[in-house]
Image 1 (tube, rainbow, N blue to C red):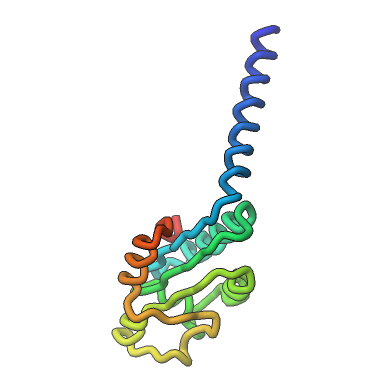
Image 2 (image 1 turned 180 degrees about the vertical axis):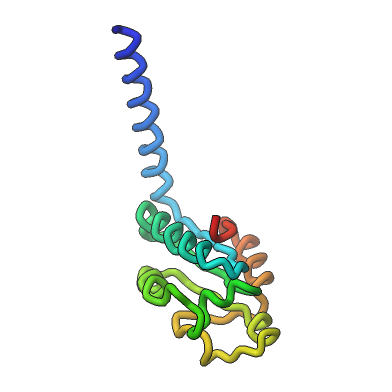
Length: 142
């Protein structure tokens, strides 16, 4: 019985240590750039959940999603399935950066893109610049 209580105590101690570590890191500035380049709509849903999960813990985190290649459907007016979620995330400060090179290659104009977008000349360069500035990188989706 003593071993059972010691085991439970150890588990509680580890859980509280993990929570304390997350709380302590929430005091520093967090900057994360997400990379979205897939046409998979389930990855889009996963991305919006991931963004909300980060903001639930780090409410002041700076988050940017760089969208290029096949991921551009995420921000296309005629193909986006998550416009309300995108708007809600923009309202929380998330930046959605659309690659102008991709738009040019796919013959898209800015009026075909959701109004929540900002534009960057080259998505891959935006990703590199953010990382050079100390932003953490996460591949969006799964």
